[in-house]
Image (tube, helix red, strand yellow):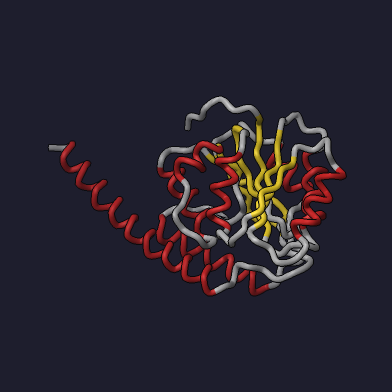
Length: 251
């Protein structure tokens, strides 16, 4: 997949919504993971109208780390994760683009493993080879979600919500219209079907140490159901039109 010339190697997007206890540890882990790597980078934090001290804590960290290329955008109204994901890509200057959640679940070594492989393929897709502190019901839900997406799409990926590293221009061009967590799977499937090269990377996946997950909300579950329906329709359409094109070519 082609890309335009970029000023930096990597743009890292950090979404935040009421993560006052997690945003600073997240940034500390991220800077440790980037230390010593031969990458030019920037970090874009987008706060999605938090009602706690997330913004104040992020600003304080930025002020005490003036050497780090970190910027903060504060939304006056809640826009949703998928919306901010695309906004971060449009604001960025990196050739590659990665989301690191502001809930302090990132692992230093897992991030370094991914960052060290940047540039080898269009998409680096992390998946959880180890989950030391993740609740069993979250593991079951993740496995079920992955199985359903693989069944409908015909692909065989290990995981779809592991926050891949993409070419930033691909995120801008092929960004998803979904507002829930299905946007990552939708983007991955679209790009792979367009011929993007990819590699799955086993990593350690942690669970949040403070606060509640935003994944199991009614809004997100409805969005995922919408994604499943669209994926079924797309698979049927691809199957029908693919057969029709082959039939015409063989005439």
